Length: 247
Image (cartoon, rainbow, N blue to C red; front, side, top):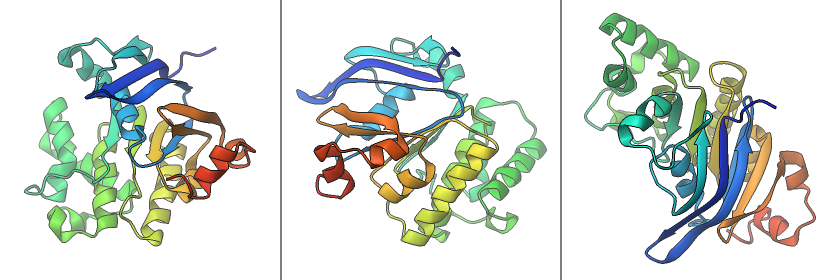
């Protein structure tokens, strides 16, 4: 069996005595999209940040690209982080930088590409998310919420990652833009990056993009399985969550 892209075993994390994760385990194989759902404050983002090496667990293991990362230094984490793209919930664009410079930022930080090569790659990834060169000089404040989200995805893609991490990619978007983001994630799966973890509370997004679905409740996965099986699960707590009663 091939080495999983991500493998998490018995992960525990508390903040100021509040236990957020209580023994979470899963594996993510190449070519798979795992959607993690859960109510507000259930620990979805905390779990994603562990995979990116931004948070250290109290106990348990986090293995990414075949390497345990939970005790690595920032310097040791860098080459692993360069293989993953992280799309933050609010897009997290730099307010004072143009779209071009926001997308170019990771390349200037982590590569020795020429400015011409950086420009060409920025234009290319923006085209992948449906944006043209007319947006290059704009500031984030001049963009709609949906466009900001797309620029955030382009910035994550520009380093040509093997793994994409999406934190609430449809949060704050209207239904049309939410659908667009779901279609974009599907498109990326067929092209530049076929492996991802998507953290969301959006059931429609989960239906659109998930190969496997995990539902986080009380710090543990109440269920993990093929998306269609989870959606039709007879587990009362799962159905209550999916119906919006437990969010």
